[in-house]
Image: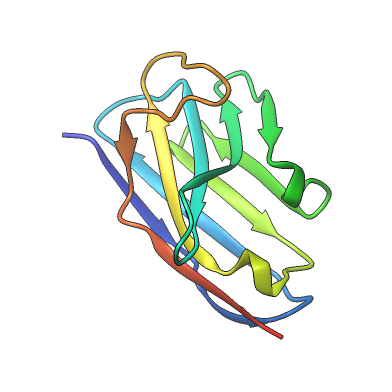
Length: 119
């Protein structure tokens, strides 16, 4: 049974940093990434990383967020720096055992973790 368990969300002031973690189990994953959904908005891709460590980012987070993964631990991380109020959202871990397109979500989702950035 596949499980994705996120941790690391919370409340932070603008300009601050948070690090999200997602521990995966039940499979190995070719694609791992993070999506977010703000109130009243659609879920959007934040960052994606392949098993070969190729990455892609949403334009809105480039230069501020860094995605990484530890294949031995089956864990993906999202380091978020210079946070802005508009980064406030529920952040979801996403993964797929197979290769998916750069903008195609994987099959599996975590339960989400809230990130709130105060101004």
